[in-house]
Length: 223
Image: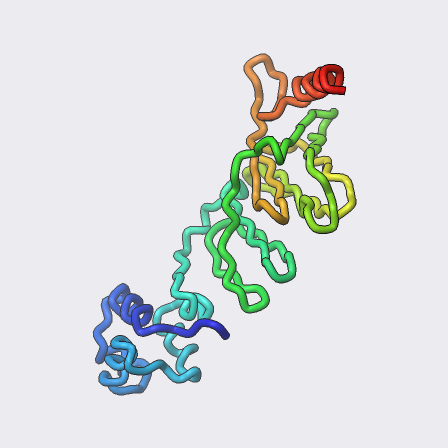
C-alpha cells in the first residue's frame, strides 16, 4: 500500500458530518486525544480501525485511504457521462457511468480526459445501412496502437477491443449513438460527436467522403 489515511482526511470527513472529536472518539471506542493526534499528524489510526472509521463516515475504505469521497450522484447518470480508466501497468480498461474510486495493480486511477481528434488521430465515420463503420487512421504497431473504440448513446455502450498489428476499425449499431471514443496507448483518450446534418446526411467531424477526396488529391499531387 503506497497510501494511508491522513489526519487531514479524517478531520475533513468529521467536520463534513458535523461531528466533534469527542463524538467520533466515542463511536470508535478511542479517546478524544487519539483523534486529536491523528488530525495533527502526531499519529495514525491502527489498520484495524480503517473499516470502523469508513463505516462511521458512510464511505468505503478505498475512499477513506484515497481521500476522494464519491457522492451518490450516479443514480441519474447516463452513458454519455461515461468515464474510462486505463491502468498504466496492465492496460486494463474500466468503464463507469459516473464517479468512482478505481485501483488497479496498486495504482489509484484517474479518469482519462478525452481530447478532440487531431491530425495524428484521424477518424472516419460512415453510415452503412443500420450501422456506423468507424475507421481510425493510425499505425497499429506492437508499441503504439489504438486499444479500444466505443460508441455511446444515452442508454447503451458498445465497445470493441483492438489489438497491436490489427486493423483500427469497428462497426456499431446506430441505435441512437451520439459519441465515439477511442484510446491510443501513447496519447490517451479521444472523442468525437456523431452529428446529424441539416440535410439529413449523417457525418462526423472528419467527413468520410470529404476526407477520402482529399487523400486522393494528395496522392496525385505528391505521389
